[in-house]
Length: 498
Image 1 (cartoon, rainbow, N blue to C red):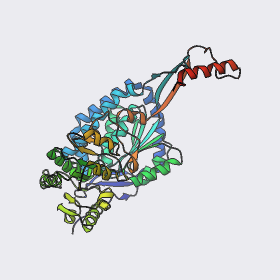
Image 2 (cartoon, rainbow, N blue to C red):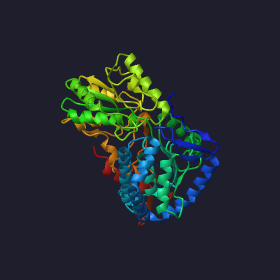
Image 3 (cartoon, rainbow, N blue to C red):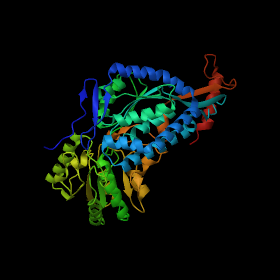
Image 4 (cartoon, helix red, strand yellow):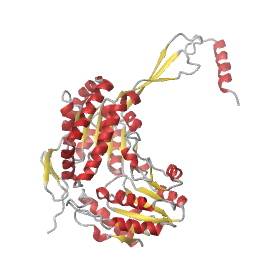
């Protein structure tokens, strides 16, 4: 009988984390109750003040130490990721290295981005000194995903910490061991206070965190869950940053480097078993190079294989229920007249999904309109890049995108309704720590990474300080009519010209 991986099952007050490759129990973790979560947030409230009082320099020193621990123990971290997700060690290493880069950037640049800044007071208020600073929010709740259990949550955690906040982190129930490893490593360098705490469990635990009085929630996951979190957070006016699903397109112009574009498509579509929110799901190719491009994609894909052995390029589908979604999308595409030039329905097994490349798929099919989150890709022929832009933008999602064009890359990138675009390289925006990461539409809102990511976890504070008494007193009931008349003349001189 073929084994099917079950969803992690609650066993009283604990649950098991299972390897998606063989159902082996790789760890057992507590199901934290609402009371447990409240207690963690209360501890974080005290720790937050201590952490904020360290200042930018003190926090940067601790973050440098943390990234040092992660770097020296990288092999150990990657093994934990592999145990819980099934992904190859090399892929676990890639996401971990990128996460380390982000910790380094956040710690190094926090003071410059969030420190006190002077602003012009303007002529009418020239007696004032104007400044803006960005203060810590206090306690940030982070709800992380399972597909990139290091890179993605640290995109919120590292920036929230650098901004001076304490963090309560709930990892996915599929990757609690990765979350625990990261939190334990942080505790090694910050033993004084519970600045970064772990809570584990299922949806109820995450919901408890949303309602526990935190100052902000950072969530990565499905659009449907993001909407529920927003609704719950609205009850207490708790702000949220949501990084949800995607249906990311690739545009291939007539003058594109087809080998590079095909290689990027294959990697972007199939790596991590297609379980990438910014992965490649749709490709729009100029009719002049369509057939050649498809042939190159098929040729580059034919040796790409899912498995748990060392030679496999990617691992199992982590959530068993997603296998049904992947198969349904393929079936719908084929039933609607699409063709599988590689793979097909038979590519979807009980743990693994082998690569599937679909062409001639109608634009209103499920494989084009819904997030598949599996190792499939649709390739469509377009008459020109204007049609490609129209079709790429005809989606409720708007996370990432990629353009391959030698002459029009920037022009096309600017027309795409997405939060991020890479030109002539796959997903490069995710590895650049200074660039903000996030989407529009059903892909969510708010930004992590870069200066915008630091400010996402800070409270803007404006301060006006009177330097000397103004010759014209405007904010007083003793103001004279002559003062009002003088103000009108001054404004007219400054702003009244045609």
